[in-house]
Length: 193
Image (cartoon, rainbow, N blue to C red; front, top):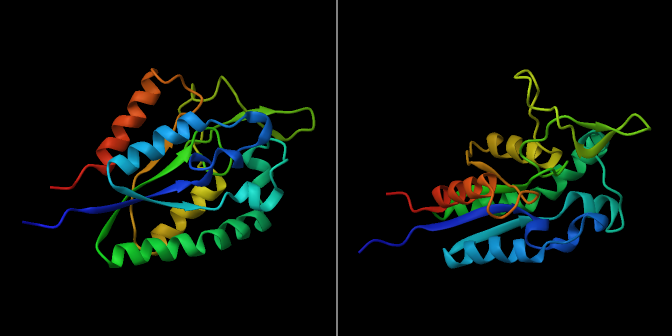
């Protein structure tokens, strides 16, 4: 009889600890419980990295767009925060665990997977509010959040590939977007034959 496959995922901290989210956006404990409960029931280990926004700006910060975080100092901060989680990934892989995926958060300027065009506020800087017209033009760029982008670079540097999934926290639980996420997650964590 063969050994059961051992699996781990990488996850942004606010999906495990909702208190890390921007205070005025609220915390979603039921969603965190749903995600972590699902993973633990499937015997999937969780590697979370520290929230780059909380560790750089504290808990009582205002919502910002990707543009405000896209600077050399914040990028360096993200790289430093990823050092230990990347060592953990390498150690798990060395010991024959499978990295199933990374789960980021919809509309996060740091941990989102599909950051599109956002509205500009009266100060001429990007707001966290998506532009409803975004995505109608096929030339519209799709960017990752700053931390997700750096994580992808760090994984690539190690020769590690894994799916990047985005939890659509802003979509209703019964929406097609949310159903697609759960199916993608199921596919990612299902044992490889």
